[in-house]
Length: 244
Image 1: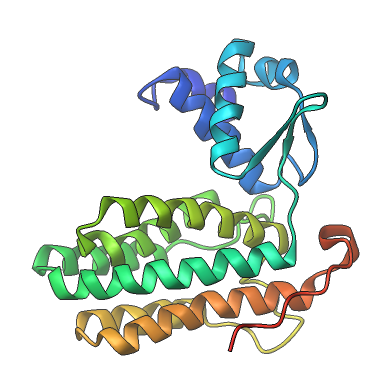
Image 2: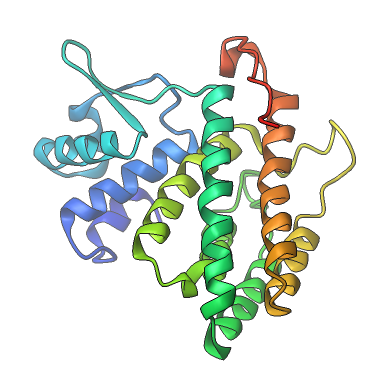
Protein backbone atom coordinates (compact mmCIF):
# COMPACT_ATOMS: atom_id res chain seq x y z
CA UNK A 1 0.00 0.00 0.00
CA UNK A 2 1.45 3.38 -0.98
CA UNK A 3 1.31 6.55 1.10
CA UNK A 4 -1.62 8.02 -0.80
CA UNK A 5 -3.69 4.87 -0.24
CA UNK A 6 -2.79 4.80 3.45
CA UNK A 7 -3.79 8.42 3.81
CA UNK A 8 -7.27 7.91 2.40
CA UNK A 9 -8.16 4.43 3.69
CA UNK A 10 -9.17 5.60 7.16
CA UNK A 11 -6.15 4.14 8.95
CA UNK A 12 -5.51 7.42 10.80
CA UNK A 13 -7.73 9.21 13.30
CA UNK A 14 -7.43 12.59 11.56
CA UNK A 15 -6.14 14.06 8.32
CA UNK A 16 -3.61 16.20 10.15
CA UNK A 17 -2.36 13.19 12.11
CA UNK A 18 -2.07 11.18 8.91
CA UNK A 19 -0.03 13.92 7.22
CA UNK A 20 2.37 14.13 10.16
CA UNK A 21 2.76 10.35 10.38
CA UNK A 22 3.40 9.80 6.67
CA UNK A 23 5.84 12.69 6.24
CA UNK A 24 7.63 11.66 9.44
CA UNK A 25 8.00 8.14 8.09
CA UNK A 26 9.39 9.39 4.76
CA UNK A 27 12.02 11.45 6.56
CA UNK A 28 12.98 8.57 8.88
CA UNK A 29 13.17 6.17 5.93
CA UNK A 30 15.45 8.54 4.04
CA UNK A 31 12.97 9.16 1.23
CA UNK A 32 13.49 12.83 2.01
CA UNK A 33 17.29 12.92 2.49
CA UNK A 34 18.97 15.08 5.14
CA UNK A 35 19.05 18.71 4.03
CA UNK A 36 16.63 18.19 1.13
CA UNK A 37 14.03 20.86 0.44
CA UNK A 38 10.49 19.84 1.36
CA UNK A 39 8.32 21.47 -1.28
CA UNK A 40 4.80 21.82 0.07
CA UNK A 41 3.12 21.63 -3.32
CA UNK A 42 4.99 18.48 -4.31
CA UNK A 43 4.19 16.69 -1.07
CA UNK A 44 0.54 17.76 -1.30
CA UNK A 45 0.36 16.25 -4.79
CA UNK A 46 2.09 13.03 -3.70
CA UNK A 47 -0.35 12.48 -0.83
CA UNK A 48 -3.38 14.05 -2.56
CA UNK A 49 -4.03 16.44 0.31
CA UNK A 50 -4.20 20.19 0.72
CA UNK A 51 -1.05 22.32 0.97
CA UNK A 52 -2.41 23.62 4.26
CA UNK A 53 -2.30 20.16 5.80
CA UNK A 54 1.26 19.68 4.57
CA UNK A 55 2.35 23.02 6.02
CA UNK A 56 0.75 22.16 9.36
CA UNK A 57 2.44 18.76 9.38
CA UNK A 58 5.86 20.20 8.57
CA UNK A 59 5.49 22.80 11.32
CA UNK A 60 4.72 20.03 13.83
CA UNK A 61 7.73 18.04 12.65
CA UNK A 62 9.92 21.10 13.27
CA UNK A 63 9.13 20.67 16.98
CA UNK A 64 10.30 17.03 16.75
CA UNK A 65 13.62 18.01 15.21
CA UNK A 66 13.02 16.15 11.94
CA UNK A 67 12.35 19.31 9.90
CA UNK A 68 13.95 22.74 9.92
CA UNK A 69 12.16 25.92 8.89
CA UNK A 70 13.97 28.79 7.16
CA UNK A 71 12.32 32.16 6.68
CA UNK A 72 13.55 32.56 3.11
CA UNK A 73 14.09 28.93 2.07
CA UNK A 74 11.01 27.14 3.41
CA UNK A 75 11.19 23.70 5.01
CA UNK A 76 13.98 21.17 4.79
CA UNK A 77 14.62 17.72 6.20
CA UNK A 78 16.97 18.21 9.14
CA UNK A 79 20.67 17.62 8.59
CA UNK A 80 22.40 14.76 10.37
CA UNK A 81 25.69 14.66 12.23
CA UNK A 82 27.72 12.18 14.23
CA UNK A 83 27.79 14.49 17.22
CA UNK A 84 24.00 14.79 17.16
CA UNK A 85 23.71 11.01 16.93
CA UNK A 86 25.87 10.64 20.01
CA UNK A 87 23.82 13.29 21.82
CA UNK A 88 20.55 11.54 20.89
CA UNK A 89 21.93 8.21 22.07
CA UNK A 90 23.25 9.60 25.37
CA UNK A 91 19.84 11.08 26.17
CA UNK A 92 18.08 7.92 25.09
CA UNK A 93 20.28 5.88 27.41
CA UNK A 94 19.67 8.31 30.27
CA UNK A 95 15.88 8.46 29.91
CA UNK A 96 15.15 4.88 28.92
CA UNK A 97 17.35 3.16 31.47
CA UNK A 98 15.61 5.19 34.19
CA UNK A 99 12.19 4.40 32.71
CA UNK A 100 13.17 0.72 32.53
CA UNK A 101 14.10 0.67 36.20
CA UNK A 102 10.72 2.19 37.07
CA UNK A 103 8.94 -0.33 34.85
CA UNK A 104 10.74 -3.25 36.51
CA UNK A 105 9.73 -1.89 39.92
CA UNK A 106 6.09 -1.34 38.94
CA UNK A 107 5.35 -3.91 36.23
CA UNK A 108 2.86 -6.72 36.71
CA UNK A 109 2.20 -10.05 34.99
CA UNK A 110 0.30 -8.37 32.16
CA UNK A 111 3.30 -6.14 31.45
CA UNK A 112 5.58 -9.19 31.39
CA UNK A 113 3.23 -10.96 28.97
CA UNK A 114 3.26 -7.92 26.69
CA UNK A 115 7.07 -8.00 26.52
CA UNK A 116 7.14 -11.71 25.71
CA UNK A 117 4.50 -11.31 22.99
CA UNK A 118 6.31 -8.32 21.44
CA UNK A 119 9.59 -10.24 21.41
CA UNK A 120 7.92 -13.29 19.86
CA UNK A 121 6.46 -11.22 17.02
CA UNK A 122 9.73 -9.37 16.45
CA UNK A 123 11.89 -12.49 16.16
CA UNK A 124 9.55 -13.98 13.57
CA UNK A 125 9.70 -11.03 11.22
CA UNK A 126 12.64 -10.68 8.76
CA UNK A 127 14.60 -7.44 9.02
CA UNK A 128 15.11 -7.21 5.26
CA UNK A 129 12.27 -7.17 2.74
CA UNK A 130 12.89 -9.94 0.22
CA UNK A 131 11.22 -7.98 -2.58
CA UNK A 132 13.40 -4.87 -2.55
CA UNK A 133 16.23 -5.78 -0.13
CA UNK A 134 15.37 -2.74 1.99
CA UNK A 135 14.55 -2.65 5.65
CA UNK A 136 11.21 -4.27 6.40
CA UNK A 137 8.64 -1.69 7.51
CA UNK A 138 6.92 -4.44 9.51
CA UNK A 139 10.14 -5.25 11.37
CA UNK A 140 10.73 -1.58 12.17
CA UNK A 141 7.24 -1.27 13.67
CA UNK A 142 7.66 -4.48 15.68
CA UNK A 143 11.09 -3.29 16.84
CA UNK A 144 9.50 -0.11 18.15
CA UNK A 145 6.74 -2.14 19.83
CA UNK A 146 9.27 -4.36 21.62
CA UNK A 147 11.28 -1.45 23.00
CA UNK A 148 8.08 0.37 23.97
CA UNK A 149 6.78 -2.74 25.77
CA UNK A 150 9.83 -2.73 28.05
CA UNK A 151 8.96 0.73 29.35
CA UNK A 152 5.16 0.57 29.42
CA UNK A 153 4.96 0.07 33.20
CA UNK A 154 7.16 3.07 34.05
CA UNK A 155 4.03 5.07 34.94
CA UNK A 156 5.41 8.24 33.34
CA UNK A 157 3.65 9.44 30.17
CA UNK A 158 6.30 12.12 29.70
CA UNK A 159 9.12 9.58 29.73
CA UNK A 160 7.26 7.56 27.11
CA UNK A 161 6.81 10.67 24.95
CA UNK A 162 10.49 11.53 25.16
CA UNK A 163 11.32 7.91 24.41
CA UNK A 164 9.17 8.00 21.26
CA UNK A 165 10.82 11.21 20.07
CA UNK A 166 14.32 9.83 20.61
CA UNK A 167 13.39 6.50 19.03
CA UNK A 168 12.34 8.25 15.81
CA UNK A 169 15.57 10.24 15.72
CA UNK A 170 17.67 7.13 16.33
CA UNK A 171 15.72 5.14 13.77
CA UNK A 172 16.45 7.76 11.13
CA UNK A 173 20.19 7.34 11.62
CA UNK A 174 19.89 3.57 11.73
CA UNK A 175 17.93 3.52 8.49
CA UNK A 176 20.41 5.86 6.80
CA UNK A 177 23.30 3.58 7.65
CA UNK A 178 21.74 0.16 8.34
CA UNK A 179 23.04 0.08 11.89
CA UNK A 180 22.16 -3.59 12.37
CA UNK A 181 23.22 -4.98 9.01
CA UNK A 182 26.81 -3.70 8.77
CA UNK A 183 28.29 -7.17 8.73
CA UNK A 184 31.30 -6.19 6.63
CA UNK A 185 32.85 -4.01 9.31
CA UNK A 186 33.18 -6.56 12.11
CA UNK A 187 31.59 -9.77 13.31
CA UNK A 188 27.88 -10.16 12.49
CA UNK A 189 25.61 -8.76 15.16
CA UNK A 190 23.14 -11.01 16.97
CA UNK A 191 20.31 -8.51 17.35
CA UNK A 192 17.78 -11.13 18.43
CA UNK A 193 20.23 -12.32 21.06
CA UNK A 194 20.67 -8.79 22.39
CA UNK A 195 16.90 -8.32 22.61
CA UNK A 196 16.51 -11.69 24.34
CA UNK A 197 19.19 -10.86 26.90
CA UNK A 198 17.47 -7.57 27.72
CA UNK A 199 14.10 -9.30 28.02
CA UNK A 200 15.49 -12.06 30.24
CA UNK A 201 17.07 -9.55 32.60
CA UNK A 202 13.83 -7.56 32.75
CA UNK A 203 11.72 -10.63 33.47
CA UNK A 204 14.22 -11.66 36.15
CA UNK A 205 13.72 -8.18 37.66
CA UNK A 206 17.46 -7.53 37.51
CA UNK A 207 17.27 -3.77 37.01
CA UNK A 208 21.03 -3.15 36.96
CA UNK A 209 21.73 -5.81 34.33
CA UNK A 210 18.72 -4.84 32.22
CA UNK A 211 19.73 -1.16 32.21
CA UNK A 212 23.33 -2.03 31.32
CA UNK A 213 22.26 -4.31 28.46
CA UNK A 214 19.84 -1.73 27.07
CA UNK A 215 22.51 0.96 27.15
CA UNK A 216 25.05 -1.34 25.45
CA UNK A 217 22.45 -2.24 22.81
CA UNK A 218 22.05 1.41 21.81
CA UNK A 219 25.76 2.16 21.94
CA UNK A 220 26.55 -0.81 19.69
CA UNK A 221 24.36 0.63 16.95
CA UNK A 222 26.06 4.02 17.24
CA UNK A 223 29.53 2.54 17.00
CA UNK A 224 28.61 0.52 13.93
CA UNK A 225 27.18 3.60 12.23
CA UNK A 226 30.32 5.60 13.08
CA UNK A 227 32.51 2.89 11.54
CA UNK A 228 30.46 3.12 8.36
CA UNK A 229 30.27 6.93 8.33
CA UNK A 230 31.49 8.73 5.25
CA UNK A 231 31.76 12.28 3.96
CA UNK A 232 28.57 12.09 1.94
CA UNK A 233 26.44 11.54 5.05
CA UNK A 234 28.29 13.36 7.81
CA UNK A 235 30.43 15.88 5.91
CA UNK A 236 33.66 14.46 7.27
CA UNK A 237 32.71 15.29 10.85
CA UNK A 238 34.81 13.80 13.60
CA UNK A 239 32.70 12.43 16.44
CA UNK A 240 33.13 13.86 19.91
CA UNK A 241 34.88 11.60 22.42
CA UNK A 242 32.49 9.53 24.50
CA UNK A 243 31.86 10.88 27.97
CA UNK A 244 33.77 8.98 30.61
